[in-house]
Length: 219
Image 1 (cartoon, rainbow, N blue to C red):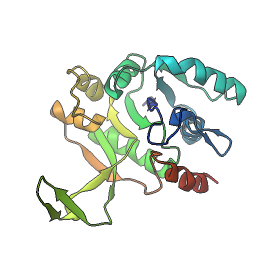
Image 2: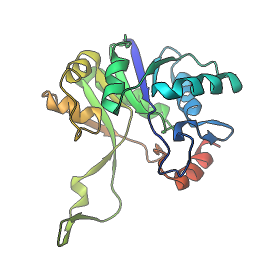
Image 3: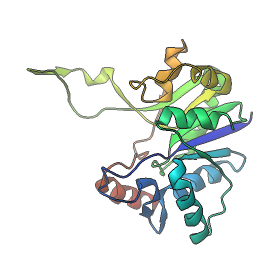
Image 4: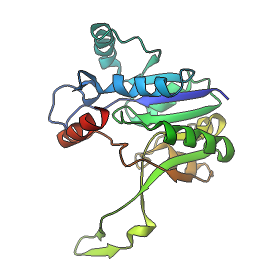
């Protein structure tokens, strides 16, 4: 089956305290996005890799690719106002039977996890990586904070992988701001989401401290 990887990269770097969008921030000598794209390519050279970027940042990305002699095959498309719109646009260019959607600022990608996700998606249609929570949780209200059973919760990661027809059908519904990932959208159209084991090292770079850890993992 042909496999597509949609990599979303719409961040502006606000929580990184940087004027440069975080996906372009240097990590061990190269922009974060290059590490992410290259890792997928090394896992499977036959992946169709589609990168979504805000239109205003596409020229910057092309210049970075020239500056770093970055020639790993990928196709760049205009992103939209929200992540939802970016993925929807990328789906117009996707030709895979299975489609994965991944955060561009998660460059530490395990071959084992990716291969397992595609294997399970081929059988079950919609799968996401998840990891257990190892700290206590409290549900916060207006006047109190109550302890909750952490065993009933999981942290959801990307890539999230779906059969193409399932994901494309889900993206026919209208944008809703409470939908924060593709799995939630797919659930909206009646498909069950299956969890597979994620990877604790699959860190989403959000804060400056995340960069330090990811640098060590990549090294």
